[in-house]
Image (tube, rainbow, N blue to C red; front, side):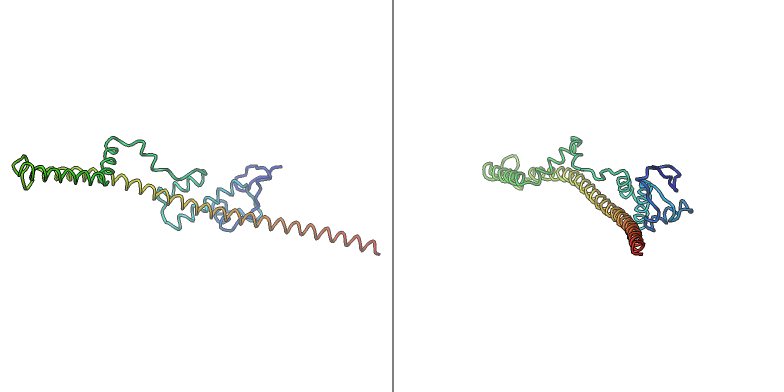
Length: 232
């Protein structure tokens, strides 16, 4: 069996039939904005009801946060298409440029104890060689002007490279924070949508129980009526 939806005028299977009396009032209000003649005696399909539920969620989100930005729009799109909203920023590491890989290596090595101890050994060896072996008569006597020049050059080159790596890591952290925000937002909206469906299910069950009770009362009245007739 099929029924005709009062919203779209299309026919749907009877199993998708949803009376308007089982729909919550906020959803009804949204439907009436597009279909003013829609009332409690009308009906719709489950698919149409889900569309208006999603629209209700979108309106609620816009009222809470104001104008939707790209993140909220992406969450609503994922919620509608039932897709995963988050990406893994670590997957981008496979597409790094040579410069980015070098920056990461320099930052990783420059911030390790291996670099600190090795560089400390180089400094002590340089000073000992010029001060005690060559007796300050070698290629870099005290106050070690050449060593100071080397240290300045290393610091001048190392600092920008490390900053490049830190900037890229900061960008990755920002993407992870955005992913966490979208996942949390999508979870909250899905929970709200789940509450809406549960409310609809509970209301539908209550209506079904009431109908069953009415049928049982009618059956009991019929039985009592028959018993009275037999007693007379």
